[in-house]
Length: 321
Image 1: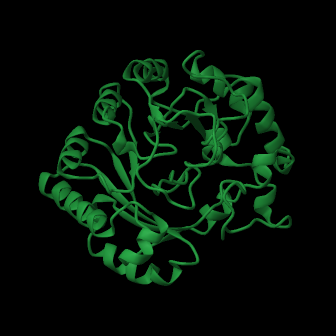
Image 2: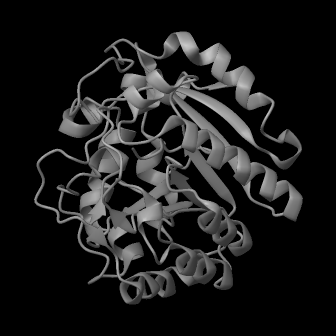
């Protein structure tokens, strides 16, 4: 499952001022490139096995590098760069090469999100030595039964062992990578949060900006159902413009520009393909700007995806352990 937009713990100033668009172009402060569409897990909360016209697969290095070259002029404004989307990044054999390319091009805030089942010694060595800034780890229980219910096809003991080893190796090698351990709260695992928090607080290193976070589950704008936190019509969040729309450029493995993380399955709203068109041009094109105007007018509920989105409520309910 993709991480929610603020899951890596960074605080943002609101980027919902439209003035940049009327003069200079609006530049995303966060770029997301989904380098692989596919996963080793089968989490019930995730969309990845839902019907889609998208083919599973990995973005080529050639296309990835072309995207990065187009983004280099804006690297000072892009403060976060996520190499994950709908899938497991460690299925991408080019991932270390991609991290190295970003670091060599001068990008900062490079992050990877993983379920850690595949985070073996070789992957740990490559990611830590490559200088990835953040590794976000999804673990959803303090016990095997609960975690493996949330994340089928992952092995709890293996995941915990991999993450503990990664933190030790980071510290021993004095690598700059930080770890964010994320718990997605659902009905079946809520009772384990306190034990989970206590366990991981003794493993992380807060002096290196490591975090333990809890989020309530979101439901991909009603695409999965479940026990997501709802936003009622009288809630101020119902009319609040969504910061993701103004801050974040999301590019899928097939090059499509998605509306946001809720649109990861298809990228179905016609915002163009970054393999064919400059991604910053697409970020400033009429379709996205019209939607930003709708949000700024307090009318985002008129858009099908935005009107059912629960992400802002999920973010508001974030707890740092």
